[in-house]
Amino acid sequence: MSHFPFLKIFFAVALLLLAWVSYGQVQRGAYRTMLKTLLSHSVPETGVQDAARDSTSVVFLDAREPREFEVSHIAGAIPVGYDHFDAGLLPALDKERPVIVYCSVGYRSEKVAEKLLAAGFKNVSNLYGGIFEWVNQGHPVVNGTGATQEVHAYSRSWGVWLRKGKKIYK
Image (cartoon, rainbow, N blue to C red):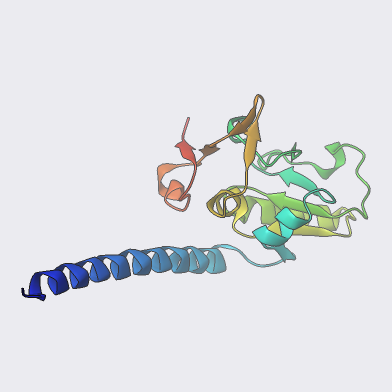
């Protein structure tokens, strides 16, 4: 009995597995590269794992627009928007309390975090990678009725960075 067919199948499966793993690495590498160039890194940044670990002691501010927030958000987050953000309209937040601002990938939230720091908030950071990275790393999101898999993907061109969850564009 020849082992040749077995070896061909083994190597084919190994090559497919290697290609699949490499593709995932390229996607994550491309996402990191995109974030590195898109963001100005002008405010402190918090990684998803740190934000999730500290989620009960921080205030999450969602810098996306109302429709995006309605689809889903991090539990307990306060919607503040981006286009018409005004730090003076925030609820009475203690300016010393840790605040993590997020949006889809981190660009809008970085700009909101800059405004919060300028308004005297002391402990503000940007969620690096935004809600997309939050969901990509397996953390839950909610909507008005509870847990959901849906995430507003902003647009089809930005939605490529959301690997998990159900993409919503409306």
